[in-house]
Image (cartoon, rainbow, N blue to C red; front, side):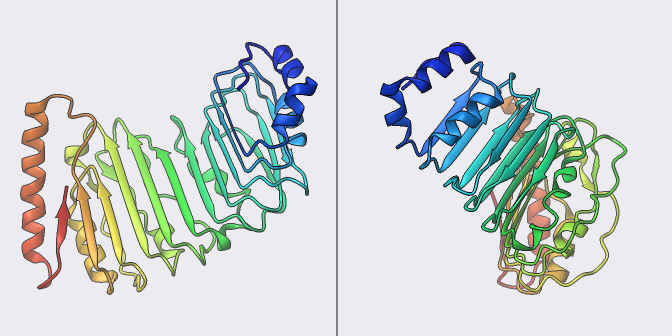
Length: 294
């Protein structure tokens, strides 16, 4: 294990003969809140032929990063809150997952990623999380798991349409807002995924108790959708839409816990209110169908 306080120290440590032999066998590298730049990370990548997973957390010195090589064995790349990062070039033969959480002004340049199947994109305090789908547009038909974390302003109305998600099996939509009382239509994403098997919808809003669909959803068949998870709210229109359009739906799980319920009494009252709404929905369901309330 190496403990480095600055880039120069890291360079000397990684380049020392005793450490070069050990990093050749390195498979997982996780860097958190250390003073390193993109040049050092690229150097490490070039000397870690067996590296399979790279995780970068809160590295404020990285401005430009190039993760590109036909010899890279990298399968998983995760970048989280590197606030100075302006551009990323990513091209390798074996990546399966790419996760990015940060600002939407980053320039993403995606080369050949033939095995990419899981995409996790989040924008902190920024409603443009779907911006990052543009550089991946040619790969969206091969994505099987898509996780979008979106910060929405009060006047946000609809999630933009995306190219067809041919192989998408699991869609996770994580919506966060301090103002949102009506969440926007998500149908553009669901309709773009004809093979969708599981849909997870999370909502964190300080007015969450009033959260509901901002408008009625247009009918659209979802023949492959079987499993739905809803976190943070219960909405009659959403459940009704799913029951009417997901003809092979097997299960709806609703977790009504919300992190803003910091007082036990407040949490108990809200939870009972949401359970009552869920029970009312249960009475309207077809015989044998169950809603699981956590």
